[in-house]
Length: 623
Image 1 (cartoon, rainbow, N blue to C red):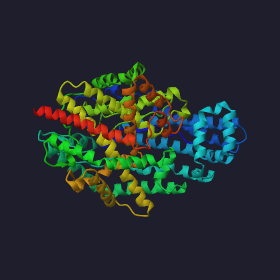
Image 2: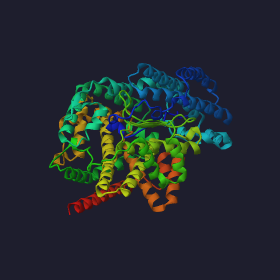
Image 3: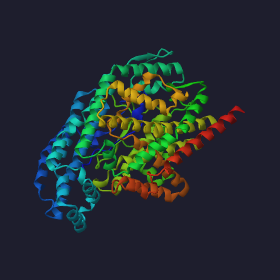
Image 4: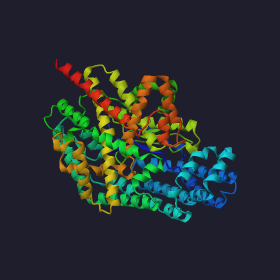
């Protein structure tokens, strides 16, 4: 049976970092921090449960050799391992969240390692189940599913196991791979510690005398500074420091790529891309159509860059000019305001949605403010099925923080709707579906803010933010996907990867996407090191699904606008479906086919329409 992995969904903030903590916001305020006691009251209670589970895992062996004897035997084995997975995920969530509060705390790191080792032990104990199900044979297993209604929650997981027969190894080989699951994750763990706590980032003194540490948080703040000179200083300091570690980080990423290529070969896949698409039963046309459509649409991206240069009053746009807002907005969005606006925007989805989200937002599910040592960016962890989702934010009282809050609550609401409708076995969901509610709720928020803007300048701000979201999610994430695939394909061809070569490969894509050779955006070669700042490259072809999700979310939003309640019901039914079917089919059921060009072309039509509206407002402002 497929193992239930923790649901950990990352905002794009992880690729842009979190801004610095507002000076007047104490991170120690209990209401601003999640309450992990709902998972376990104490570390001692957590450890006792971890040790109890370690004692339970060997009992899975009692079912070996019995799965084909009867449908009831099959059910007992699957239910036993499912229950263990459900309990183990709760243990893992506690350790993972506690570690991310402060990555400098070694005791928390060690607990997280113990939790990861526990998950690995569980997978090792159950590694023989898939091979035995396959050995029993599809005909008999499907007859069991027909005869025994207790197997209903396992229908789709069993179908998926049977589908993957040709890529499933024998019991001994599967167990051997399971033994190495924790070491296989080592590159990601090493990178995370290096990025978040070990690199001694430099300090930049601003004209005001303020000193800002140019780490991931400081960089995220400074790169949107209205002064181009300060932006350039921040870029040069940040990427120069990263370059000092390029050989090391290059080796860490190369080890991850090499591991994934080897694992794909071991399971008889022709490539890592084939494995990642096959895992969720996605047609290859989904990935290839996205990349083709995005590349055909680069003139629209370049139009945006030219508009950006015009609005910022720049003759030549540089790479460090991409992040400042096109129009300044003198508004603060503290947490209370962000909650209120998010709920007002979500009225579009009905009273049941808003009531549920309001109650959840007023509970201690979030770790809200940035602080030194805390994991940068934002995510939602929804793996504790019997508790509730947890959200990590780095709120800085700006509109970006508000948008990120809406994004992560899209994930959380997805989790809540899926858990209400699905048993544990199918309450998780594929990444291909997971990023749809998050990106679509950002779109709902942007539309709401644009419609309620009090001045043309404010409207321009929100329209510009929407354009930047399209750049960052549709174009940038597809560029990341092309880059990531190029790394895998290089290793699959037998080529070597070094930090210098990886930067060269990234730079070629960076220049093409930004029209550097045509003079659209000027890019300093130092910024080719940007790949070192993207943790998503350790998540195995995750990034392209941001772009497909934004595309699908845009299509579903249009259905809501045009169809009213029918569109809302269609949207919620997709969220309720969890993993009860394959993600591509679930989305087709909702009326969106991501293997065809039409949804992608609609995104570009929307982007051009936004620019048309902005240019009209700009021309009116001139008059």
